[in-house]
Length: 165
Image (cartoon, rainbow, N blue to C red; front, side, top):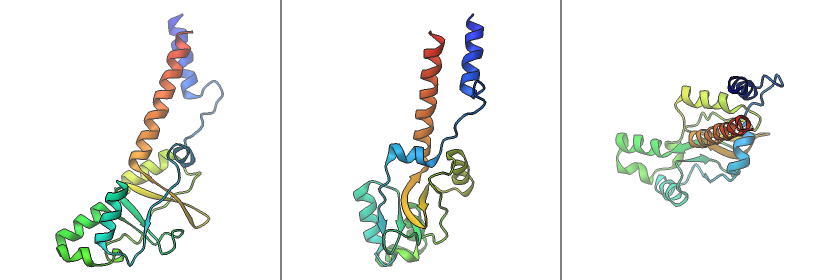
């Protein structure tokens, strides 16, 4: 009996009962996280960038002239790399000099697993979410991991409940 219940639970978890298992999408992550995005202008100083990062307790900012477009992305890692190579003078320079201009973005309907793979392959930790060429949100690798852990915990709880019936 327990073996049959375990097989049924495995089948349920794998989607075998319906033949379909819903894939997690970025919209699922945003539903829990929310969509607020903190941006910085390309002509703001790196010192101001550091103040904003500290104030919001975040690791990266989208660089945008108008708060809607994505002109670049800048992270604490960018600051550290440029401090090492250029010294403290970098703090008085514009964000545009240290930002990454070629930004990997995603959409609401993109799959979480695909984005996680892209982030791993490209060694990036923050990806802006863009819809119709307008900035909607930003997701971090931490957001992706947190969402996946919550989903796995939910699956586990459902399987335990099913087995205990």
